Image (cartoon, rainbow over all chains, first blue to last red):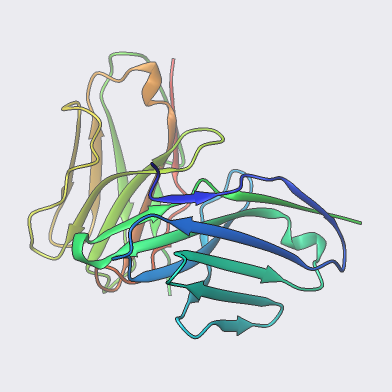
Length: 110
Length: 113
């Protein structure tokens, strides 16, 4: 079983739509959580950390549910420029390891 | 300030040759990670360095792969006797301390013919 699982998509949405991605992780000892964005043929870039109480950055909202072992990313008012692959990343502090999901592809259409 | 720098950005080599990939982490970052990503696939952990501690080599796929980090800064990933299945993008990332958020370089696209 993979440490981090994501729906690969693609999610095809119109501009202005709200879209949500979920990610599940297998190890309850996981301690830090992040969302990264990766454009085609580019390196991953940090979008936001995910905090236990949930956090928001502009149009982006991240939530963590430790009991069910999933994290989510909500994007409101989607822009064409949001089209990318979104990677869920989980850190196991005890092992100094980061585990990456395979990513969810988002296509925002005009 | 400068981000993570990797060189070369592209490397084409013949099967059986050795290659060296270089990573310059962000100044002051103590942790350095190597990953590789095949086309359309997720990131595969290779190795990480933290300060002067022994590196975690648990992700290296074979003994043809090795990495060094000199002076706690620049790192080189060496692949000996390259095979076609080694073709991938090799990504380096650094963080201020281990387990903190990662910052990636733009990667080296390795093509083994």
